Length: 444
Ligand SMILES: [Ca+2]
Ligand SMILES: [Ca+2]
Ligand SMILES: [Ca+2]
Ligand SMILES: [Ca+2]
Image (cartoon, rainbow, N blue to C red; front, side, top):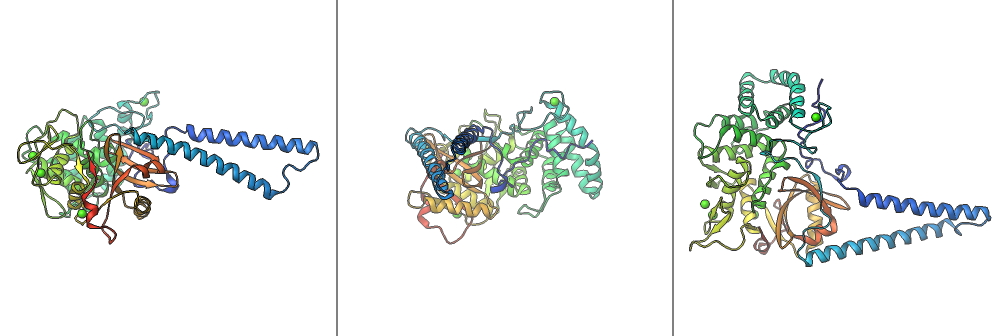
């Protein structure tokens, strides 16, 4: 039996979220209402037609007039719906409410959760409940194909894999994630780190670090990193004000998994890592009260310290940016220009931070769409409640914008509301940006 066909700890859909393959929403109530009203109006038309047939009268004078009538009704309905929606969004924005059209599409368990739920795995053993026994059943079913896949690798790589297997043993979710990365061809993986190493080599280096920073458990670090790279949508800031570096972590884990593993390994061991642009980031103290993964805690702290610049000392436990006078600045997140700094550093190119206002709003929506169509993801800042929130846009169609929320969820929002909330966006370099764009917009 082979269950690998049905991915268990589901890999993020963000790579494939495109117009034609948009994931299904959890709630389809709106859609159902629409279907019902469509059915109702079809029923009405049929009754009119039946009556007309009985009386030998034409239903509508000509196909043209019926088409016009239908079109007019449809347009009116749409206009009313859009107006109602716009009012809701306008009220929400005015009252500092969170997004009203937001829908959670996939909510994988955070890697430190240790247990699974419906969004992670199916009822593999068929006992009617979703729990770790299903993960064990999936692992068992994968044994044979895993052995086959391993035999196809050079001995050195087989040994690296076995070393990782020993590290994660007992953490069933990490065990399954490791298996699936092998079966899906993510291991050994492309040489995507700036050092030219692949994912297997970097995980192996992590697994064999001789000295680690205080409070870092090697096996947990390996297990967390494997699960995060296996499904970057599970990377979650939890209750910390770190949406910006967490979004950067998701971007890296998705686009250059070996690089994410390399940076985390550097930070966990030596305590310093040189990024793609040549700058160095430094490990911050770890051990916050939240149960963030150790990998994210390391990455986010170092990224924050780098992004807030030399004028601020970032505290990874209180999440404060302390100035030269010893005072914490207002707001614990990052400015858009600070996100630009870390995004430039991890991509190794001069990305463009664009501040969105009413004059360039629709132009930037087009640009996001074009970037998505080119297969790129777009980090954006949007108004969320009283403040802002960083997200990674992964898809867009006529009705919805799809994104990974650094709360560890894949979500979508209606295009109109997303557009109204958009504050800034970060694009790969081209000629369109202006210097001033880099200095506005604030995000916690
Ligand atoms: Ca079960
Ligand atoms: Ca700093
Ligand atoms: Ca610091
Ligand atoms: Ca830049």
